[in-house]
Image (cartoon, rainbow, N blue to C red; front, side):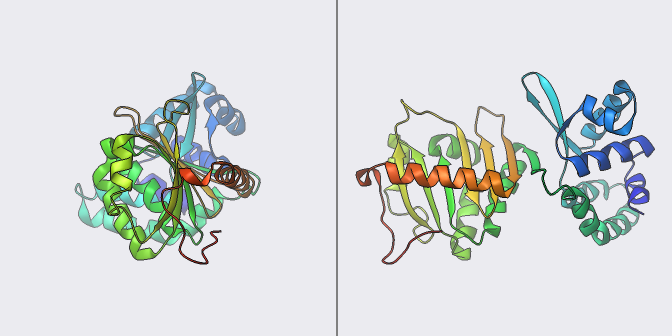
Length: 271
């Protein structure tokens, strides 16, 4: 049935096989997918290019090697919404059918318990998805932030996100890259007074970075704020999460208190 739904979305048999293979095995090279499916590399490459054109897979480069990943199954619903304009009734029915099978697709996505779940996003819409994912957190968010770069690229999105985080009462602490703009913004007392518990400054000349990183609820998320190239990544894996959380806590304990710009409420211990 899932195969039939993907065909109704416009995928042929090969594209369906490649998409499901990526969904079950996370990020992979073309050659690896070809080996797993026992198909020629060029055949799989052509299918991946078509899937990329349909926004069903994302591509990143690691040392000049292309790595592909299937999108989160729930994002397929957004793709169907775009296609609905062509035939409202047909694609509305398809959307409802996909909703029924989202749990099964998600199950395939996490079938390998030892493989991290890795999701990739691009552009401002991707930045929004990555930021808003932290609103599911049941624990304190721990982050690294370049305020200058963030506000230059996604100021409106971040303002919307902060309002929702405050309403959710999700607490956050972060290391912030030091700059006159960031100091003025954060020390005005107007920025997220309900949810931003504390932050410490990082010397931007000694330790520069332009990536926002958030650590929360078994996940690590990254957002690049480089020129107009916004790329988001969400990794879900307990071992990777614990390593980053411990490293963050170590750095927080090592940086002296005079670098802290806000103090916890009485009795707050974090988590």
